[in-house]
Image (cartoon, helix red, strand yellow):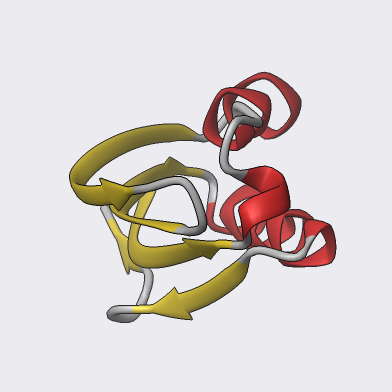
Length: 79
């Protein structure tokens, strides 16, 4: 298992889309939201993602392809 902390910055068009739920279903990556702020025009989430390191990488590539800005907040930690 690996854990990766990331900040996801959402554009207005994706505020209401359940992106993290989709990540869990499609990539088998669990998310733990640590902080978040959302308003009508934008939003961000700081979360920890847990799963296979390759699955986390593919999930974040997919999230970025949607238009969400992905900022890594540390290296992947393998356990």
